[in-house]
Amino acid sequence: MVPIVGLVSHFASADDQVNKMSIRTGILREDFERGRHLLLSHGWSGVCGWVGELLAVADDGERERRRSATDKLLRYFTGQVGRLDYRERLAAGRAIGSGA
Image (cartoon, rainbow, N blue to C red; front, side, top):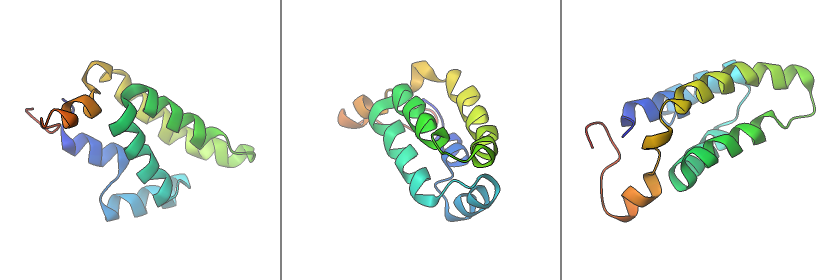
C-alpha cells in the first residue's frame, strides 16, 4: 500500500500542506478534498478523473500553473496503480497505511 505519508504529501491533507500547495498551484482546498475522496473511492481512475477536472479550466495560464502539480501527481501515482485499491481494503476493514 502507498504509505499514508505519501498521500498526505501528494494530496496535501494536512492544513499546512494544503495552504502551501493552494498558493503555489491555484488549486483550492475543496479541490484537494475532492481528489482525496476520488482516490479513496475509485483508485487510479479517480486520480485521472480529478486531474482532468483540475485541468478543465478556461484560462490557459491557470491551466499551465496547475499542470506542473498534476504532472508530478500523475508520475507518482503511475508507479502505484497496483496499490490503489483503497475502497476494497477499507470495506474489508484493512489498513491503507505504510506497511499494510
